[in-house]
Amino acid sequence: MKPNLKKILIIAAVLIAIIFIWFLFIRKKEVPVTVLAEKPTIGYIAQSVTATGKIEPVDTVTVGTQVSGILKYLFVDFNSKVKKGELLAELDKSLLQATLDLYKGNLQNAQSQLVFATNNFNRQSLLFKTDAISKADYDAALNTRDAAKAGVASAQAQVRLAQKNLSYANIYSPIDGVVLNRNISIGQTVAASFSTPTLFVIAKDITKMQVQANVDEADIGGVKTGNRATFTVDAFITDQFGGTVMDVRLHPSVSSNVVTYTTIINAPNDDMKLKPGMTANIVIYTKEVNNAMLIPAKALSFTPDSSLAATYQIVGKPSHKGPRKTNAAGRGATGNIAAHTAKSRSDTSAVTKQKALIWLLQGNKLVQKRIEIGLNDNTHVEVLSGLTVNDLVITGIVSGTGSSAASTSPGGSPFLPKRPTGGGRTR
Image (cartoon, rainbow, N blue to C red; front, side, top):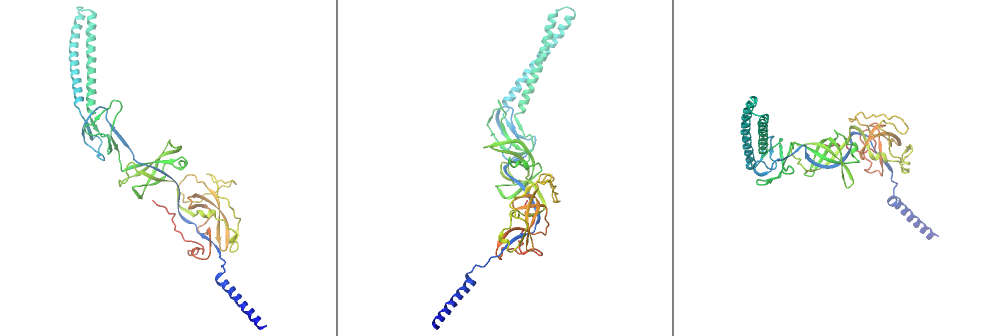
């Protein structure tokens, strides 16, 4: 009997040891589930659209010639700075000068004919008054004098034409600016028979450039004159340039069934970094708010589940419905007017207000709260009404008691993670 008791005690001790080891080392400990929460912050938020475009001078002038000839002198080159009225080039004037001399000779001949015809008419007029000649002879003398006058006028017009054509052999700059392009060389023949050839392209002032942005039709509705814009160019990828929307052109451009509208953005270029033709990657801010109350966008999608019921008291009904829009006047589906309490708004345009449900952490309670929101940049959401800066907004859940549950600021929740403030606005 004693050997059997000894065996039973040994087996019992082994089982107890196995249970003890399992309890201390093998058994999975129950992991508590907590929530992540943070207070609303005050910062900057904006809605924007992106586009691509080209850097162009504000004003360019194409310089041509109205006469044909061979280029004899060239006084400027690419990138030359020119003044209004400065001589750019000169055509060979030999043929034009010969034409002018020819017309001057014709003018002298016509003037001589006029003197002879006038003297003859005066004589015939005296004879006609004494009835020495017939009326037919008098009329013939009068006609010859008038024809001589017309001949002089025609010759004078030809001389003026030849003088003007001779002056066109000198090509002058019509504006102050910089020569962007030169299409001719010395000795080249310029033919102006059918259309004016392009000799130079001059930019008026390259310290003031503009961006011609191609904005998609889906985004053009929010773009207005005066909107702030920023852009980058590949040549200076770390630099961000600023500008303002000056014009939205109504004429559409269609390419591969994609409709875009040309939007003009001014671009100061005092440091001369921007060059004509550069490709710009543009961001146009259609709405901007400074000092807005912000909460994380993920707070709108948080809904408590059953795993939190053991730790927290849930006050409210979990809902999976998204934000509900109101119109520009602030009326929702129930017809109640929603007051716009964001006094920091600098824009006067209508804001699309929405009703949304979020959850607040109040001690050991998860309390559902209805708020009104405005701008949403998919990272942060502007709160128009329904929250204070001391509320703790739940943004998610975390398992365990490790570092995932961030420490709090003084007076905050033990589940309040730290985050930078200020809205992250860059210029």
